[in-house]
Length: 245
Ligand code: UDP
Image 1 (tube, rainbow, N blue to C red):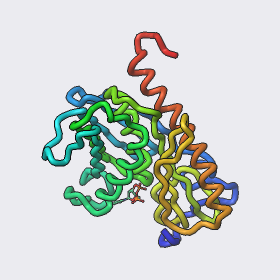
Image 2 (image 1 turned 60 degrees about the horizontal axis):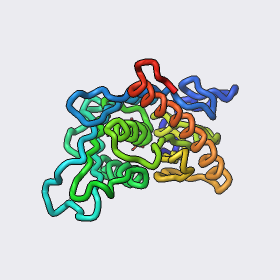
Image 3 (image 1 turned 90 degrees about the vertical axis):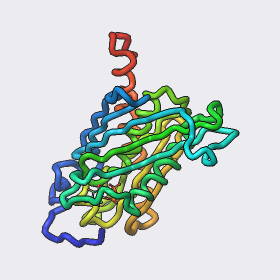
Image 4 (image 1 turned 180 degrees about the vertical axis):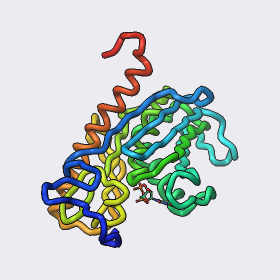
């Protein structure tokens, strides 16, 4: 962030971004639910060039036992980047950044999942980033919601993720890696479209109050678009025999 890479033209004179998108356009998002045989629920998501696999296990016994809650089930999330997911080999040991992202994704999913009926158990969400290109926390959150629904975990709503931000002095939707590195701000959003509630909001960079408002508006619009793709992935899995709604 902060104009480190000056060689990249983030926005040309026609308002087209470095990957060919318009300012208010998301990258292509594809999601497939139920891709892992040995998990209770799973999803594979491509969000532009991000590729992430999510496996959900549970509700199941909690180990160590003292972490369990007698009143409710608990949600545990692990976001991890494969060593080959980025240009420079990533150390496979959990970094501070991965611990932080695991925590914010857990907190973004908690308002959606209903684990009261599963006291003393845990639902584990494993997110493996196979390829990263900026916006992995939003992509992982989006995939995790679908994998939780695929596992049959009762949910109030899906959580859709999409970032907004600022690059070349313009407010943009769905910040890619170049824009994240050389741009001015990145504002990842997690949003429950049906309940109209934001569950993840972070800001890296600087925005004026007016730009912030615009980012929230287009970010929510991006989440609404992602939500349609999430629902489609679940419909394709559960109504594959022609019962599509
Ligand atoms: N990144 C990287 N190496 C790392 C961590 C991140 O190359 O060890 C890249 C990766 O493409 C990631 C981007 O930097 O998507 C932005 O990372 P950030 O921490 O902003 O999180 P994200 O935007 O992925 O949610």
